[in-house]
Amino acid sequence: MRILGIDPGVAIVGFGLIETERSAVRMLQYGAINTSAGLPLATRLVQIEQDLTQLIRQFQPDEIAIEELFFSKNITTGIAVAHGRGVILCTAEKMGVPIYEYTPMQVKQAVVGYGKAEKEQVMEMTRRLLNLKSVPQPDDAADALAIAICHGHNGGSRLPTAALAEIRGGNRRGKARQILNLLAVWALTGLWHGASWNFVLWGLYFFVLLSIEKQIAPKLETLPFIVRNLVTMFFVLIGWVLFMNTSLSGIGSAFAAMFGGGTSFAGSGVSLQLKNSLPLLLTCLIGSSVLPRWFGFIWSGLFGMGRSDRRGAATVKKGIYLASVFLFLILLLWLCTVSLVGSTSSPSMYAQF
Image 1: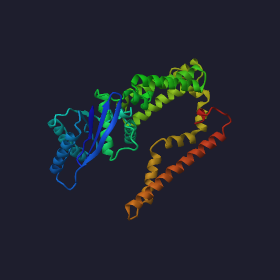
Image 2: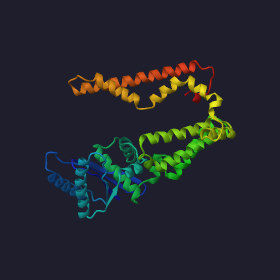
Image 3: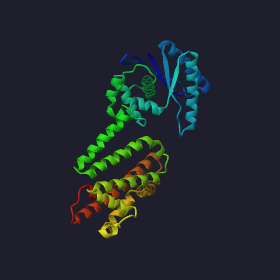
Image 4: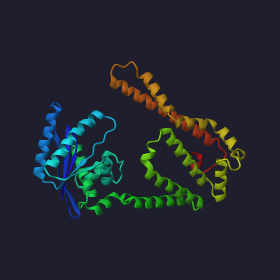
């Protein structure tokens, strides 16, 4: 089966032709349709229609796969791409070739095994799947080949799914296999910290959290930044309770104290520890906020003013910003060192940070 993948556009329309037969897939041709920016939009659309018609007649594809339109910021570019995409859909229909549409996330999931993979990862996996010496150029052609592979994998054609799974690895062979791998990894991670039930519970706890997070990740990303940070720190603190208490009774007492149902932590020396570590805690609190970034931006803005060239001003601002953040990290490292040197106890590595 011949599949023609198309990455829609107006200035550049990438195309890639692959052929699948039994358990083999090979690249036949790839390239791009280029239109001049100086031409009227209508003229450029006509050129896309004519060139695509010629490609279909030359390659004789059985099916065409195209990426769905997706844009979130540059609406002007999105509208232009929509014009080109409409011409491509119309041309495929006129030529009698079945056309299938896929979202960018579907393409990434099919090629890399992860719907939020970076563009470079998709291009590299495309090269490996097609046994090419280098990544196809231009990028639009590589994207078109990835779209064709996506259709071959999802559209019922005979792509080498066994070879694809072997390249991807076990974590990308479906959700059930992914969850099984997470269970194995986190159970072993817990045992690696010590042969105690609290470490096993700690590992299983994070296994459950990660499994849930992978299912509802898109919804979590819609929450405000501060809410996501607070939720993360809440569950991290719960995990520390499991990690630091070697007995189930100790875990229960800690949870009771945390949620107001037991003895307060104040009587166990925690108040004194907080008082002695107050400078370090305040520094960590400031360092985990946006204040260091604001500090860097303010200083870079003050010292970057007065330059006539924008590139030079940008370079100075970036340098001052990085220097400000670096100095803050040096201060934090110094405070941590002073705290550890002045301590009379020698707790575990995790408890020191």
